[in-house]
Amino acid sequence: MNYTGFITAKNGSPVPVRGATCFHSTYNPEREGERFSAPFADGSSFFVVPGVCGGYHLAALARRFPHATIIAVEESDDDIDFLASLPCVQSLMQSPRVIITTTERLSHTLLRHFIPAEHTALQVAALRAWEDTFPAQAAAIKTILTQTLAAISADYSVQSHFGSIWQRNILLNLRRTAEQDAATLTFPTEKTAAIIAAGPTLDKTWRQLAQNRDDYYIIATDTGYRALLRRGIASDAVICTDAQMVSHAHFFALAPQTLCIFDLDANPATVRNAAMRQRMLFVQTGHPLAAFADNGTETFPHVSAGSGTVTVAAASLAIRAGFSRIRFFGADFSYADGKAYAKGTYLDDLYHASGNRLNPAEQQFVRLLFRTELRDKGNGLLTTALLESYENSLKSLLEANNFRKNADNVYIRQGDSVQGRRAPLAVRPFDYDAFRQTYRQSLDETIADGINRNTGAFLTLLPYIAWLKTHQNQQDFESLVRRAYTKTWESV
Image (cartoon, rainbow, N blue to C red; front, side, top):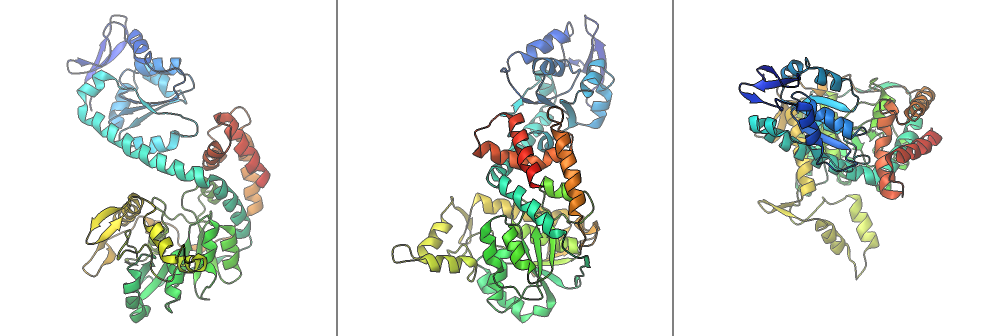
């Protein structure tokens, strides 16, 4: 524990100490707290404060900024429990706007409470005495803030682009799922799960699949599926997480034995095309509306999409299905031999169909290759920051589930799997009418008296709100919430 006791200031207020170090004024800590809050600009809406200490600085921030969210951080729960005996800290713990957390939970807390559409900026309000006494903890907090805010920024950027279409797609797909019959899905987990991406090395490695087809249960990404089918190999499953209409092109041809797996926010036209031909399984990859609809029932099993790539979703599905051996084909996360994709994807058809003498298909592929800044990965491979984030997401998923790569490039599970402990994959009935009633009630509760952030529906609106803020003139957060409420309520 970081604290060793308390002393009493001249005005009678208790002050926590560590040895001879006092974390507040020994004369009037409340007045010192007022000086602490004074430099911040009017209208500040979000603070992260390293060091709870006696709470006097936090109380001053809360008084001056009554609508701001304040996250205060201590190293451990033992420290928080020790400080909770102080009257000021006890009072702060009763406030819904003050969140006291540990360094370990800071990232999760920030992801839960920092809303870019509402909070224009995050400010770190450093308590000098705490930072000087615990420099390692202060540095760790800064690192966590940097990494988490980068993830939030990237996620918000995607929400700003897709928030509206996600909302629409999920609601339309939920209606469709109500038409499905229950079915048990079985997987030959004694085989190796082959994950098929559409990277350029697939042009060379696909023959290994063809020669040893019976050894693999093939789970293709939507882009990789067609490239493999054109080589005479029908995948056992195909997974699609793309909300855009372009994903429709991946499903013009489907082998009858292929299980189609769709994220709930996938494009409904793509889903409709597949539904006319074969069985489907709907999953969720993290959208709060999909999670609300599932409500912990595993009707829509959760699979990880990492930082947003379908290759990670395919691997996550294999783990959920119980496979202990996974091998990747075409999961390059780089450009090999000057190419972005393997031959046979929808891009071949698209670019050759639209190509002409002034804009040939080759030029369109080159434009695709250089659309973002390239990085040299070594061994003749080029990559981008986005592709690196995808690769790191896949590595994190495999490590978290105890998979290690052997000399044959096969990932083998060592012991138990975190995802494997969940319920088996199955097609489960979904009562859309019951969902509709529950969701409407929760939506109403969200705006019944101001903005109620504690309803399940509030979180479901946030991606749509991000889109509205980017594409509509309304910037006031309450107005954005009400606009999202109205449009969503009318859709269910």
